[in-house]
Image (cartoon, rainbow, N blue to C red; front, top):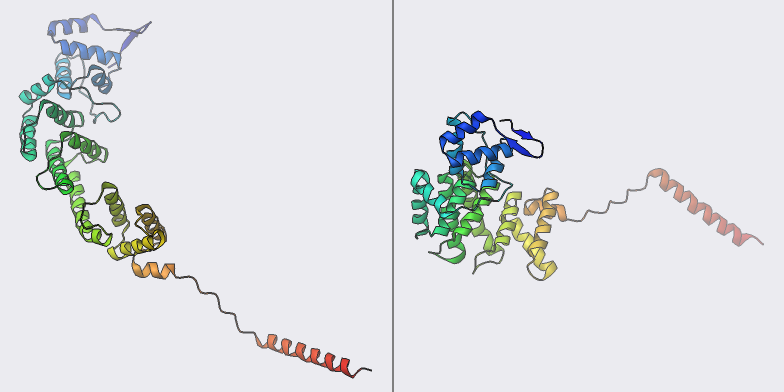
Length: 310
């Protein structure tokens, strides 16, 4: 939609369009139309400038479409480079009344967490749902995953805060886990990693506690590089011999060095770390042997001649 800007930064609209906006009596539609003129027809900066929820923006845009003031809304993803709008209680209440998917999501998340969401919690959930635009089924998988992780770290029955869910939701969005198949594939990988962790942790000297997040990152990286349990245990032994205590960064450097050399099993490491043998001296050729023998004979004759001389 072209914007007509007068000298001095003044934005204008036709009398016909102004009459349509006045006749509609829709304040949100009028505000959005002005914002579209101001931002060259781009919806993303309009939403950020107005601080509206996605639902309110969609409703105003639909009103403009009905009056033939705008065309079809452009397809766009979440606003990755801008801060989320400051949702207010009225936004959440309106969404619960208007959006059956969000209302159902609220009930299911409360069931997963075992508690009623506070107004602040509902705003956080609406941020994940509306701003990040994650599908409800993905948000439910995310919630279940956060519950499992919280219980793993802090004990059975512990539940994550909504701030934890929000932080993890941003991570999922940035990883592209915004569809059900992508989220399910990610969780399958995480469950496989958890099984490997159970066998690796005792080999790494961790028996009476859960691994720290950084330790889990190291383990995940080593598994991803293709090392088996025995090779990882060997790297730990070498680390303890060198450092006299466990050093995760040093052990990581050992494994990265082996990976760079293409060594991923104990047999490959032992063969690759074995010092190269010094080349054997080649046997002298027959011609060399004759030359040395002749030289010795000449030296002996010279010594004899020197003794016989007066």
